[in-house]
Picture 1 (cartoon, rainbow, N blue to C red):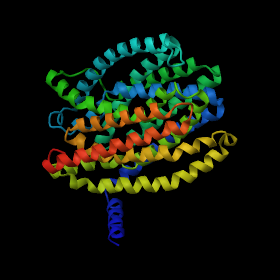
Picture 2: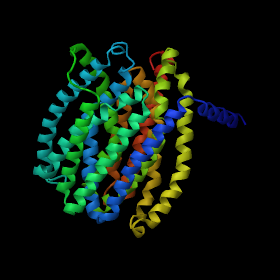
Picture 3: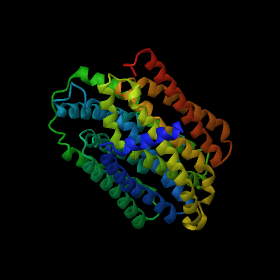
Picture 4: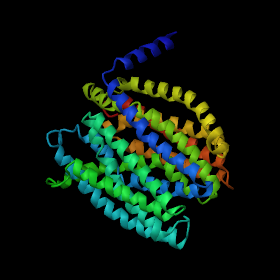
Length: 431
């Protein structure tokens, strides 16, 4: 009875929260924006042969992994340092520092990825894509697109959900439209798929420069750059690990799975991603309130325990709804051609649920700048996943490819919870 009473009180508290309306806007925007992505991916799966869809999935996964790498954790810098006293009265200074860091770090990474890609793609042929016509286009597209992943977070911290919604929907619609144009005009041409990604990225980059009035830049302080870099770098690893479990992992296992199985695995992973996007968007509007509660309580973690319970309720409730719906969908989609991919879907969705719960540790550690905990736990999870994948994937088997993902995310969550609460017991203000 106590559990039911607590559940009722939590639901009433959530319903009466002033952030609920804003959260609903984020939910609707994400539902539309990522609904477009959902339609895009499944349209490609329906239109294209499974084997070519597998290659297109590889290209999109490589692009998605790299653009997260190119953000360098700076999207989290915008979220956290917007409230910092150093930039409270000068938001332009924050924007300028972030832009300079992005450009300098991005230039260095472009060179590294160019040399590394030449060895892996052109010489060793680890990835079955063309180095010049596909790989280099994807890398450049990822660099430009990362800019549009950093600054829209200003809409969140400034509590402007409608502007955030407009940006999200338009950006996803533009990418979907150009990909379809490329495929309908040029057929099964992976070069034109890569080219469309580059065009979308260039348009989004120019739009961000204009909307946020990036230029002229203000004075840049070296000590501020170093502080932001120390904060952001661990979060880059965190974000890369997060996208790595979906897109990056597919790139890595593409050498073990044939394109047909890679297409099946990719479709199931897309469905699992839809689950994560649905649940994560439902709490977007709660982030500013969580940070404010921590600020008002001198950082006591008990002040946001409610958010942990909300994560669990929302995550489990959505699983109950989405699993039967996805099974029905796969039964009729392309006459059941992808139905066998359902065998790995519960495993992948469980992994996404664990990553969703990880948001509790993320809030605590980003607020107190203890991002090393996020980095360490993410690194441990990645090592676990890759080690198990190396052991289990002896042949093209999508179930053996899915199990390491869930195991790695479980290890990551356990380590992060233990670490954050151990530190909190020693010093409530330290995380």
